[in-house]
Image 1: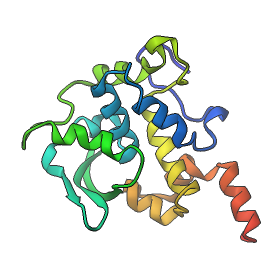
Image 2: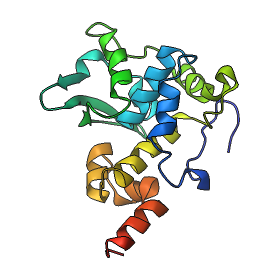
Image 3: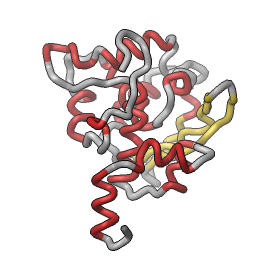
Image 4: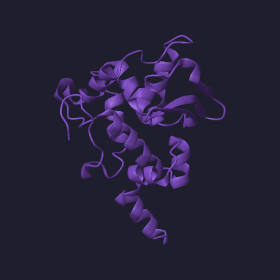
Length: 196
């Protein structure tokens, strides 16, 4: 694991299972953490986006369907190894962090980016969450939030490999398995259902 602003790995055994909504809500509801940091945290988690992708998000990419109960994120950039693509996906309005994410969307004008900053700013805001008021929120970094989203979709919403590939726009099942397939909770669930 690297220190400073280097990339950290989600392969650590501490991240095998979804951390749980309580841990995520503890961060996003804590008033000692600046609202902008909480909005960033919620947006990275809910979109499952890479840092570079989240930094490109604009107000007009979020379309709220109140009656149907979801927000549609449209044409979010997928930036990997110099290749550019897009993905669109829904986020349920009743998910615990959606209101926090939507406060970032609602507080800007059409054409503006939600977070008009660089990677170093984003990384600093997420990685320093544990330092607020001496509280122990645990270690957070942007890629962990992406992995937590994948695990949440598998463990809490029963997403399979195909659904994960669709949500994240992954082109191989290997990526879906890398982020979620090693969850002991999911394996136990499959075993109890007689599918393993």
